[in-house]
Length: 330
Image (cartoon, rainbow, N blue to C red; front, side):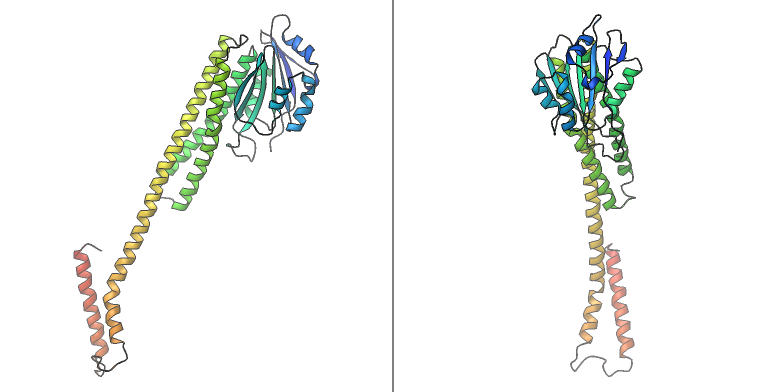
């Protein structure tokens, strides 16, 4: 498991100046908002990490509406955007890049965003969140909460793109080496690819819709630059979703090819068995007929009977071979 992201907080000025908030998780909400909306504008970003129960406890001092706290501490979440008062509740999902985790087991990022303040909550570590925090510490902080939302969405797309590209590469390798691998291994690999693509797509399209809702809601504190960045994030999520659809369609095509190859393989095996059975059927009939325990069996008293029967069997085999060869069954 990855190391958990600790709680942190920043006061970010309109000039991108950054000041860390000591004990941000327990800061007095009135003073924090005053710092965020102070002279020269700016905002405050506070992040809380932990289980839903721990989040509910730590958010008590944030002065948030009960509906907001309930949304931020929910056990199960899906990407959505819910306007509430002068702000919005946003739930985003990023690929799970934690050690030993499956990428399609996407990690939620819960946001409350309003003028002068952004509160983020996480239950599991999220690389995209860590990327944005590093960007803020490096002096490249977004100038407003709306731009911060766009930064989250763009970093989530950044982290998802290599995963989608890897799925494409695996699918290409399977399609190119289809004849060289065993069909069972190919089917398992295809099933894994389709499972990952389906799991990622399950959240990509709703996430795009959530960001679109946030974009068109028309909050007056969301700048044109933030809207431009949001549209870029929406476009990238749309492309990723379409790419995942294409991967699933290609995987289905390759799966059909695998099934056709398997059916052809079985047909070939059945054809070989049929030819072998047909080839030896007359001989089996002949030997069975000569082996009956009744009187009058030809050559029973002849000292050369066995040699004559073997010769007859060989003659039948040669005749059958000629007939099968002419019929192109061999």
